[in-house]
Length: 274
Image (tube, rainbow, N blue to C red; front, side):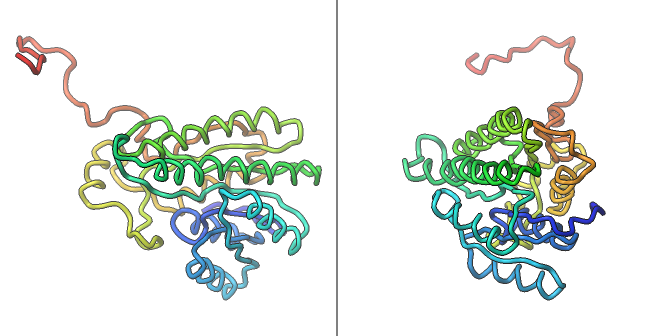
């Protein structure tokens, strides 16, 4: 758990009603931040907000479709009308479309790209403009995925949008550094969100297969992703920008599932057609 106080820090987290976003907004508010839960899930958003308020937290809900610029503006205005400034923006909202490319409809593709890539652009642009106006610096953190650099089947729009987010992070870091605004990307490995998501998380078969590629041999906890996000938002990280940090238990380090010597004295064919 990150121990720095975020007293009087205003934080917006998209997709904060469940999953990793829920862990992020919870961690910030418990550390003293004033938080906005930006999500389309009205029931879960208010559930999270009421829980945090009961703990003494200062939090509001903004029901926002981040793929629509007018709704992004309303979300930002909610923060400014309530607290007068914005310090940290977390682009976390995401959706899932699981089909092979040849089975994807135009609508399937557009849905995931619009939420994850277009939404991150629209929100980052709005947040950056506000931070520049304030002239006090700021932090923008994008939640990526190991899929940004490690493709998998039935996930083309997910992989593409997350790869785009990584490059958006780097470009914005170059452009916003002169305003003392840092921009970084945190990419989680497979994370156990079963208790904080409507879908219940990944199947047992998928998890077991995935763990064969994770040196630490377990799923991430949502709080571990939140810890990295909070660190990048803290004073200790004020000289870190443009970085893509994968919090994945070593999954991205290499091919753990490939084992054994690289050579053999045996002669055999690897041509599947022989």
